[in-house]
Length: 464
Image (cartoon, rainbow, N blue to C red):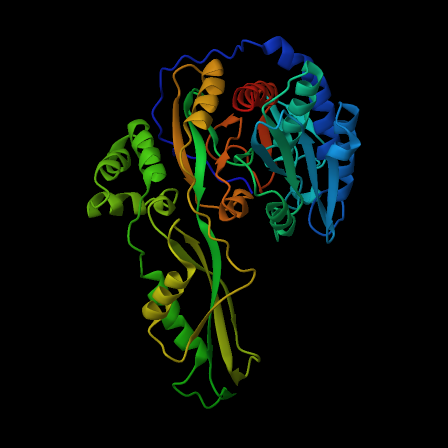
C-alpha cells in the first residue's frame, strides 16, 4: 500500500547536483538483466485477492533465492489462508540482532479493459515501466531479492542476520503480516521498501528531497448506527433514523481534531516548507518552529495533501440505511474512517466522535479487524546515515528528511511489536506520477538499477 509522496505541483525548482552515476554502477548493471527478467515474471503473476496466486509468486522467488545460494532451510513459505508469506534468512555472524527487510507480493486488482496496456504484462515505453506492481511494489520486492542474491555471490558476511519478510495480503486483510510480526519481533530494526522514498520536482524532474518514513497513522473504522421503529412511508414521523444520521454526519464533517506534532512531522514540515512556495510553505515553516500557531495549522489543514500530517482525521466513507422504498427506515449507519496521529488512543477518538455527534441514541462501534496502534520510531543515526550515503551517491546534496505516512503499511505491526521500522523506498518519482493502485501504473525505468545500487549500499553499511 504505497503511501503518497507529494510536494504539490508548484514545488520550487532546485539547483541540486543531479548526476546519475554510481560508484559501483557496473556491478549493479551486471545484476540488471536478471532483475528485469525476474520482474517481468513477477508482474505476470496475478497476485490479487481471491486468485490464489501469491503462493505461486512466493514459490518462484524462493526458487530464485535457493538458486542464488540460500540454503533450503533458510527459505520458508508460510501459508496464510489463500495467500502466503515468504521468509528468507541471510545468515551473518550473529553478533547483532537481525535486521528485517519488508515488502509485499500482492497487488491491487486491475481490469484489462480499463487499462491502455495489459496490466499483467511488463511494458517499457517512453522511459517508464508499465504494469500492476511496478510502483507498488513488485519492483521493490524483486530488487530486494536480487540484492540478497548479489551479496551471496560477493561472499558478504554481515554481523547481523538479514531476514527478508514478504507478506501476501498487505493490500487487504494483512493477515500474513500479523503472522510475520508474531514470529519475527526480536530484531534490531526493520527496513520497509514500501514507504518513504524520493520526490522529483514535477516541472524540472530534479530531485527535491528524500523521505525516511519513521511513523504512520493508525487506521480505524468506526460505525455510527441509529435505529427507529419504522412504519409506513405515508405516515412520516420525526423519529427518522436517516434524518438523525444525517445530522450526526454533519457534525462529524464540521469537526476538526486539534493539531499535533512530533519530531518526525516537525522535521518533515521544516524541509517541505523550504521547498514549497507561497503561503503553504510559509505556514509549514512557521508550524515547524511554533506548533501552537493556529493560523499556520489552519493553512496547512486547508490542503488535503497535508492536513493528515498535523491532525487525526475522520471522514465518512460509506452509508447504509432503510430496508424498503415505501417504508420508514428502521436503521441507518455510516462508516467513519479515521487516520489517527501516533500516540493518540483509539478509545479517545471514539469518545470524541460520541461527543461530536451528540446523540445518546446512537451507537459508535470500532469495526474489525482491531486497529493496530503504531508508535513513531526513534530516528536512528545509523539508518539515517546509510540512507543519506546511498541517496547522495546518486543525487548529491538532496535533503534527507523524516516523514510520517497518512496511510498504513506492514511496518505498523512491527512497530506495535516493539520493532523500530523505517520506510526506505529506493525510487525517486514525481508527485502523483506512478498511479499506484490506479490505472496504467508505472515507474521510471531508471529506478530499477538505482534500487539495486541503493539497497546494496544500505545493507552493506548497516549490516557490516
